[in-house]
Image (tube, rainbow, N blue to C red; front, side):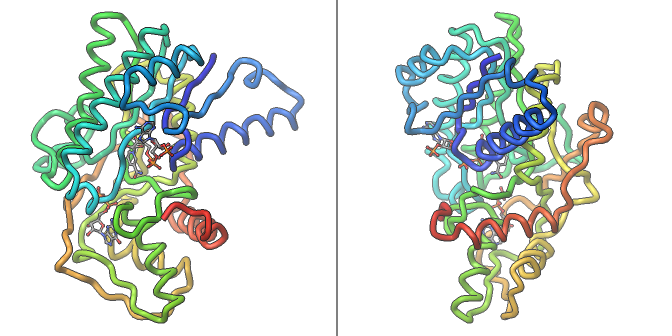
Length: 324
Ligand code: NAP
Ligand code: GDP
């Protein structure tokens, strides 16, 4: 099993690197070498190949000839970057996905696990949302470029199965956070953005400004939990149909609660303000993890506050090198 991970240098890719290494170390301690001998892992970044180019994508796949692929590479960003660049999100991601899936097919990769997101679900819907509802109505207008491009992965997967019998599937994670995230205030997602803003406010003695009303609700998944689930999907999940990877509906929090948790994790003691002139985005995208629970009833998610503390500690320790 030779696994090629596209987007191996990003938030999720680095978490998968971490978990694979952790497994190898555990096996070494136990004196077993089974998985190590059976699996070779290759992590690509955009420096290895620009996956917008079919030529470069084919060359990378010819070079490594993977049997299995985890496809993470994408143009990714938070609400405010999405609102500005819907065209770029649409075009870049459509090209990357088409190139990667076709190159994987051409070298005979037997399994590809790609990554959707709960933003792909319809905006006007009933809750909780599940895997059967991806194409049921337009996504939220703030990120339609990204959302439609991601939805098309599901179309690709069903067509590769129908025409070529390929087991190309996708996972649907909720908002992800963890070490190695993109902590850019302008372009990043809410948690890394709030962590960076709180760190700066603490240093400068200024208020923390949370964007929007704080009322929207999100389910957050720790990147290391997502990485562990990704490995399970790659090794064991048998379906072409996608699967939601999420904490339970009861673990959804408001943006206001998430901001309070960041304040606590960083020990911030200044004022917290809300800038309601900024967009709220989709109010909620509450996803059901019932399918995941049918397969993995015992999977333990890291408690949100513990995962957030680990992420904040990582950011403070790696401030100079962190992406921001
Ligand atoms: P990220 O940290 O921004 O990483 C993106 C990765 O894609 C990087 O490794 C980047 O390479 C690579 N990449 C971007 N453009 C590329 C190109 N043209 N050619 C080759 N590689 C390219 O993103 P992430 O948060 O880990 O996201 C991973 C996957 O999870 C994505 O498919 C995303 O849609 C999905 N997802 C993310 C979230 C979230 O909250 N973050 C939620 C749901 C789903 P460089 O490092 O070289 O730039
Ligand atoms: P989304 O989940 O796809 O909408 O993307 P984000 O991770 O960017 O979360 C956006 C939500 O967080 C919206 O309700 C924003 O108003 C709110 N928010 C509050 N402060 C921030 C911030 O500093 N950065 C970002 N990206 N969103 C923020």
